Amino acid sequence: MNALKKAFGVIWILLAPAALYFIITNALTAFAKADKAIEVAASTAKAAAEAAKTNTVLQWSIIIIVFLPIAFGLIIFGKYALAGEYDDTGTQQNMA
Image (tube, rainbow, N blue to C red; front, side):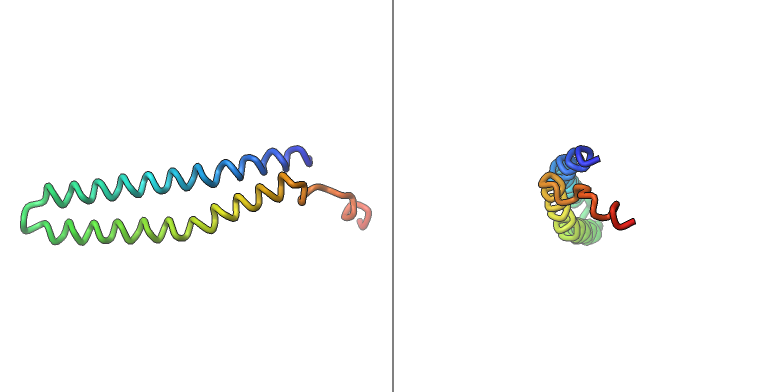
């Protein structure tokens, strides 16, 4: 079981940067789509397209800001799992 915990520690450490990369690339793609919508929009629809871009930037900024501490937590959790902090030492088994 301890080996499984250490293996999952590696998974958490690798998952955090991968998830951050995925989120940031999706945000940049959404920003590019919003920019393209502004370029294509007629003069009457430009204000609506610019408001949509502002909403897109705001939403993705909030998502990234919220997920950053979660990602760092995954890295720390993985580090402790690799270090053996969650290994069974038998103390709880003896208490039962």
